[in-house]
Length: 595
Image (spheres, rainbow, N blue to C red):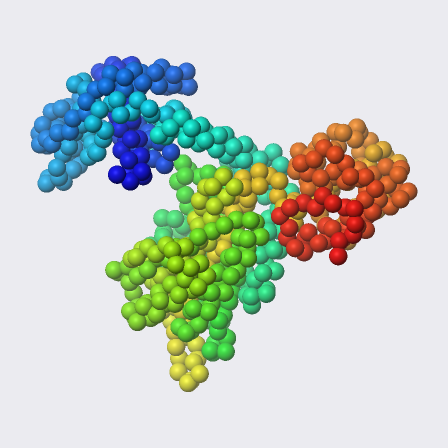
């Protein structure tokens, strides 16, 4: 058995041990047990219990689980009829509901652990509890969960458990979890005054002054790259009439995810919706005037605010929001330009991700059964995309998901790993043969005929908000120099040094270096601590000696030592170079001027 499959069996078997432990602690007549699947780092089981569990209950449950495993009880699989199953679980309403919902011809299987615990399950499981004696597990948490995810159904208590084959693997995972908690953007963001949320606008972040500087530094970097690659940036309406979304297909397929402002007209002609996507804006700009083959590729970039309706339980800091900005681009091309344009987009992705020291992999999703359009166009597009991926990454270094593309075109997804090894779905490159048809988009070809362009939807960061959340956690709030909200902080030792400090600040600002200073007559260490807590890359301390010699004393983030007698012009040149090169590392050598 493959390790991954074995791990599923191991974790799911442990979930039965958990259920049996809870039943033995609280009594069978007091427990309703629902479902207990394995998940990425362990498993969970849902219950209704006579009281609310707390962390104080965790040791007793874990000890009971170990006690059960030491009994070395056999596991027995049995196939039963629907009537038999309903009789066995007559006192368990969740199991009864699951059985009742099964198709008439489905084989119903149950598993006994020992003689006194039985569960409804497809399996497979271990043969004997002793196989789990070496199990390394730890209860993670308990939380509320609605039965079948329906907020109108029973509220259950969900016990989450970490589970790994060895104690070392469990320890490594717990260390990673601890590190992730320390990196949590929901904690670091408010601490560093980057963003906030308010109950009057759920899932809609407020960017605070420091966070907005970070956002704009990221956007300026993005804009520079896209200027080099021939993109034009636009901005379009956030609110549009229903008719636009009917034509695009969003009204039929995505209405539940849209914020809709209903009008009074019976035909809905005065109904509006906040845009969940930017593509119709780009289409309208393309169609604003006649286009010819000379206009192609027609590259439109857009970082407008978009809104998507989410369930309150799905909101998660900057990772899952209802208002965000997406680094969208929509490109109109002829069929023979698809390959070269996709290749250029992959180069942009490599450049952007590489600047952050992030690696990524590509996944190609191909034609589904319900595809629309000319099969020959699909075949050529897929062949071109595979050739590009082979050229850029080599055989075996990308995945192909056969039949997993959208009905309107194949796509490439870009998945990225952060400092903790977590994988994120980031960029998407989507070919679209359908929207140009919906809007009857045309361009004049070389031979004078009217042809339909192909649309490429693409994003590299995806949601800017989500990417910044990932950035915060990846860098633990210590951003590269070029992206830091404030790059330099200036601290005059005493009020009489404020004049020189202001000179330093003015020179830095003239060089487009983001700088903050504290001129208050307070203890110098308090001023330094504030900037240190904000993770400013460099803190400059200036006093009599620095003012007399036109120098600064530099403390580099992560170091408690000051580098004295750094000529101001040398420091400026180094900052300029780090901004220009988008350096990941902070320069610590100020002994000579860089060239």
